[in-house]
Length: 427
Image (tube, rainbow, N blue to C red; front, side, top):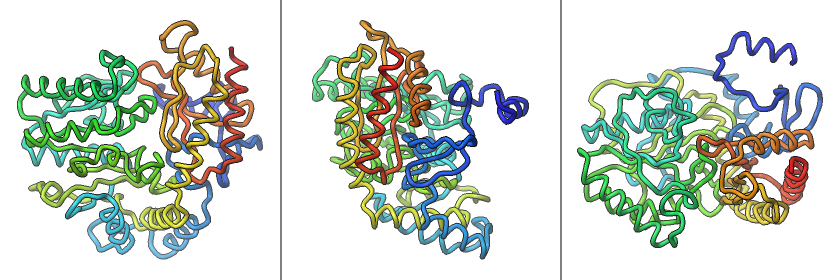
């Protein structure tokens, strides 16, 4: 145990998790690589939990941050803030939500918390529909709509939450159905659920579940849900904290895979837009956003420095077509991963979209989750110079792969080869 690790344990909560038996201190990064305090170099396939979206130490972002910090670092939302207005304009236009209003926060948790505040105020109801296996953050309200036992430390809640089928395609009571019948069964379940409840405020859903192990329903499920929700006046909140900004390759937002009946009423975002700077936010149509009847500000949301970073990062993303790169390189990566794990008795499924890929591990000969092997593969990959993430419901048996969207073909092939070696090393 290093001195820094001992100091960390002495001042940090027991529940503040660290990866690896010998935790890493990352000291610097460049492109898709990071270095630890011992000088070891790693190919980063997790990007600080999908947050380093474009590249480590991206010159355009660091330059924007330095220049803005040299002018003014902080002012709060009590004053006009040019970078905040400029980024809000761009996000509103990209959101697909008509007459959109944007409110900036400091994290995805806070964004989802704000979205539920808006929905419950607008609908005058504290009932929320959420997806099983979901994750929406660590605040009191966010954990109360998280359908994942491992990330829900209390049963107390300001909300009444009801959980809906559909977020996981290949497990659960409808797993054996065709995609079409799966969607119909989930819609029937939603209809039945609404027949037994009071009026709900909103459905909150991740188009692809992040912490849950990069699981997703068939395209069109949330569009089918939307028809039901609209009949009841229930809002749809699309949690795009992990799926936003083109990570899935096929779409700029995850909700666009379910777009038949229009955009969500509320969209939340965070993580990648700041490329590591602390930015979250909510987009909603004006009628919903303006429904609060009390004062509200944000001290740190919309900080001039973070907004400057977000503007530079978004410009780089669009000018270099990184969503297109996620589609192209991500498609190659998932093919390579399926090839290198073919025949492994530990691998149940390789799934994903763009540069958002999950490898679900099981105990050989069974369908039972295997968190021990997942942890061992994480260690073996690190020893070989590759950083991965973990997730997957309460079992934490899914390897999560989400590198910066500027990943090259050569780096994708290198990472897939290392992961194959790591898996073989623990078999």
